Length: 372
Image (cartoon, rainbow, N blue to C red; front, side, top):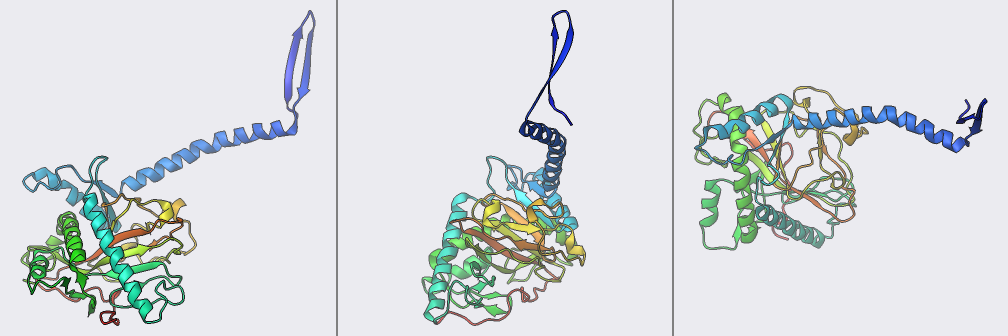
């Protein structure tokens, strides 16, 4: 109750004096004592969160592309186990190693933003608001997935297989590439040749990473490894691509509600950021383990300070895989000027030798902008 400085003078007599200190000093001392108790606990909590995040990250070895090295495939089996059990896994490179080359990511990002600009021009020519602020819209080439605008889904044809490359090179030398099916309908407006080349190179790079993981997880579930001739992924694969495209999250976008992409087993979402992620530009938040439960989550929870939520801050070209049924949401972009662009693909487990429909749940039939 009393705080001061005690002074003992030894001049032949033992006298003690108490010099009172002001209340402000008393408050400072009290705060120091309080934080000395809290900070160790806070540090432990931060360390525990970091350790938990590491449980969902698989770092690929430098020789991960070497098919002749029998030990190089251990990472894919590890990733498959985490993905199957937890409903998500992140694939990362080392400090000096990128999974997908920077120039390939940059070219894909440029192609996606060029496509976005062209689709916005066509929407505006119809007298509609291309930002989606007035009203969200859905066309086969572009979808506004936010009631407040600023969050766009740009579906494209999957061009990561040899069959797609051969199909692309055939024809009359046209400067455009005809897109095929995503979900329930054909993507209307063709890609320009330069866009298609950039996206094809990117898709092939993604496929080299994803194929061994999904084959490790799904190959035992298929009756045959021999796929049909029109397998749009690769020969002898356990899966195919049901949808592909780009997600563009502009500054000022709002956080999405927690959701599942669908109720069905056998779908895996693949996200690849085309820029380095940080908390301000709206990365994806996920709830591991919710792919096998029917639990829902309150929408107002703090994604960045919750032990049940993970927000992987991946570098450009790293990969996030998660089960279609895992609860997740895109966070709002709170930055002033940075647009977050990522590429996605929806992989589907092959049922025997049959490739059934694509991702109809997220890509129902829509009007096209092809003739605008």
